[in-house]
Image 1 (cartoon, one colour):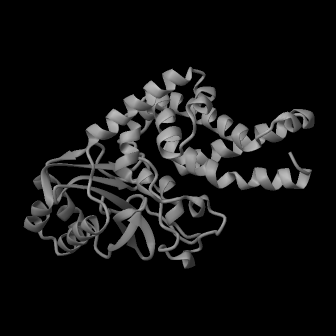
Image 2 (cartoon, one colour):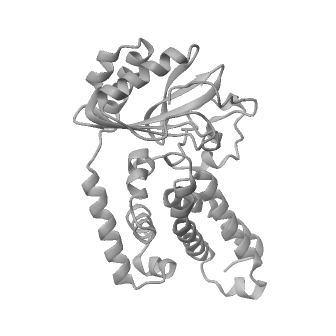
Image 3 (cartoon, one colour):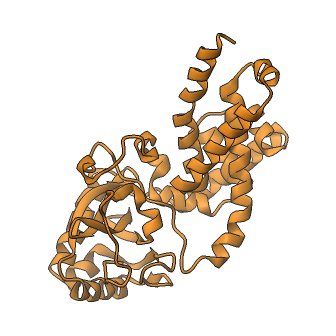
Length: 313
């Protein structure tokens, strides 16, 4: 197993992978970091002799992190029922794009996140529709290529049962469809920004699918729509009404969870992060996160929030 120093280095080197796994399992960067810290705490709590017996500390940490996340997911339903308004995953900035001069710490866990199609808001929302066991089996196997034998240790089920769980989860993903990403999404988001800034209701209606849905997450900490707004026309009217009430709000085109999105800020302080799903050239879903506890990766040390101020969500 190598020297003690090598083992410590190897253990520390697993952190980035574990954090990426945990975020996809939980949809919360804060909860993912807590899960990984708990896994490390359990590792170092083992007697020295027991640690020496473990042939692959990385695999051990992965299994324990998966089990911790499974427990968190199991209790999430009760916590979500107490949550004020809709619950959305925490949005992540692209650290190569987002201004580090805002006071961001280079050790921020957001710096360690790999932003790919498995963290887009649309994908994370689909993951939220899965049972905890389905989500664990699917993320560990289909996203991170863990063998079903290892996943079985996490879930306490047979490999065959884990394969069935992953297959069920895969069907949910297929049923959700494949939204547009890349240049097509960037262009659509840019048009939304322009129409919102000019308060052009007709242009917004043209960009939105007639059956579009906007979901906002304020967590009860800031004012926002508590229920999803359904229908392109209603969403357009709502957005323009918000623009009228929010003078001085600046919209920025920024990557959100690896996909084109919008960030609204006032006086340099981030107030809202918006993600989009686009199908057949029209925006079908808008996810708006305003809960300041979920925007910490976007905030500098000096940012201040006034929860009573109107914003774009």
